Image 1 (cartoon, rainbow, N blue to C red):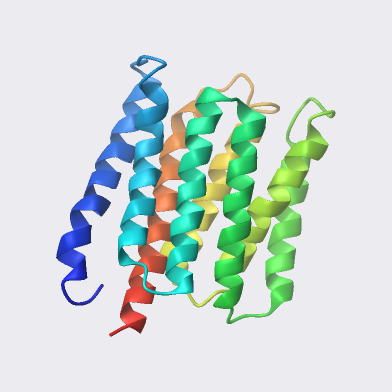
Image 2: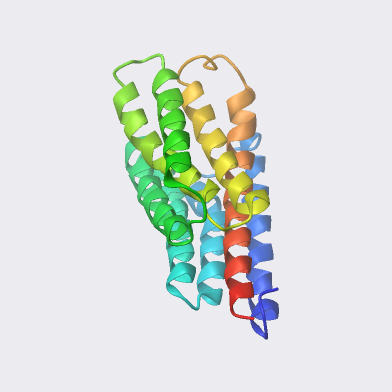
Length: 215
């Protein structure tokens, strides 16, 4: 699927990413050292970025690698510098991903706009602290643009489309924890697995599609 000698060389990196990202879920029940936690958390998506970079042979290939790298940076910064700084890294990743998807657009832009507005409005509504709502909505505009442009791109809806949807769901759970789900255990149980599964699906869907383009 990825062509030539590239897949055997890079596949172990993808598998290592799945192991690192999947195993990090254990920290929900077993806290780890503050010095080690950001490294472990960033390793999953960081290895996905490395995998994408190893297989990048075009501008689109480097764009998905960059978007994933910014996501990994956001994972680390959330733990080391707090929500606002981490969110800025994720927002940059959403912008890069949206550029990638727009370069591969197949469907009308208005469909992406509808999705982006819906995600932004829902994110704005969720937090109980209304002073936080504008900043959340600003971030969610980028998140929604990423999801919307993924939905209108040529990439598979089963991998990239569902991956982007899971990413959005994960972030909406974070915002819901600031409002209607403040007393619920559900966000804590679902935020990481939906986020990481979303990133893995996006990475696999984009990279394998670009690999098929070269064959």
